[in-house]
Amino acid sequence: MPNWLEIVLRTLIAVVVLFSLTKLLGKRQVSQLSLFEYITGITIGSLAAYVSLDLEANWYLGLISMVVWTAISLGIEFLQIKSKKSRDFIDGKATIVIKDGKILEDNLKKERLTADELLEQLRKKNVFKTADVEFAIMEPSGDISVMLTRENQPLTPSHLGIKVGPEQEPQAVIMDGKILDEPLSTIGLNRAWLRSELEKLGVALENVYLGQVDSYGQLYVDLFDDKIKVPAPQQKAALYATLKKCEADLEMFGLTTRNAEAKAMYEECAEKLRQVIADVKPVLHR
Image 1 (cartoon, rainbow, N blue to C red):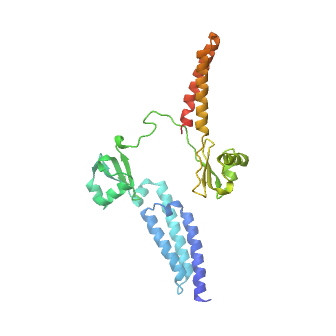
Image 2 (image 1 turned 135 degrees about the horizontal axis):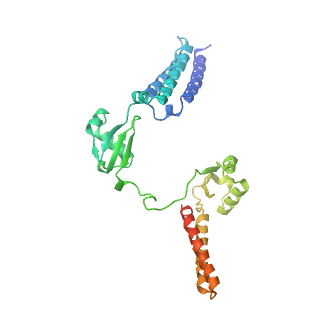
Image 3 (image 1 turned 120 degrees about the vertical axis):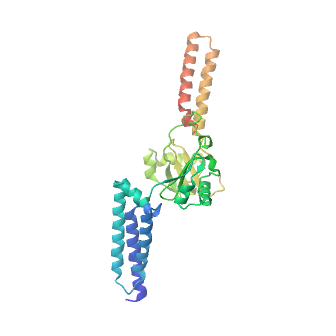
């Protein structure tokens, strides 16, 4: 067999084996790596290159070595799951670098982290003053987690005592101009509903790059043609306006009628509707 053809075949085999072993190791191997996982990734990659190019040696020995490295890595991962001491020894412990707005220089030296590097990591978290930081910790992965002081934390509805409705994962029902039936059925909708919503927006199915339905049944679309502006769904706003109009009508009827019994009925209905509006307002105002 010619050398070039043998290299092609070996490379294909190495790619397949490397892909299979990486899938077996899991998502952590391609995201935030621990020290041992980093070493494992480099070693397996080097072995794959050896299998592809070293024509003088027995190439299958490289495959065996890759499998052994993967087995060791899996064994260590299971050991980490079972034992916290093993996790602390292999991955290391988190280190506090800022506390109460004060930088802990000794801990920075321990992690061999300079002030410039610390400031860079803080800027990535949109933090530009160390005095604004209540607590910052360097994770075993090397990332820095930051908790701002209470007065510098972003304002949320809970700070204002505002209740908001629950939010579920939006479902992609159109992609590349094609209807996705499985997500539609997941949220209890069908193609007829989807086509009617597209007609309301004045949009053709084939011009939709991505269409998503939120947990309240509102359709949002992104078009291939970015010059076309699609109006945002107004169903919730229209429903809220209708409820407020009904409330105002009931109050007006109660003020204009001379019948005491009817007046009491209108006022009671207006009060009940007012309570309903208060209950659904967090959902309709999302």
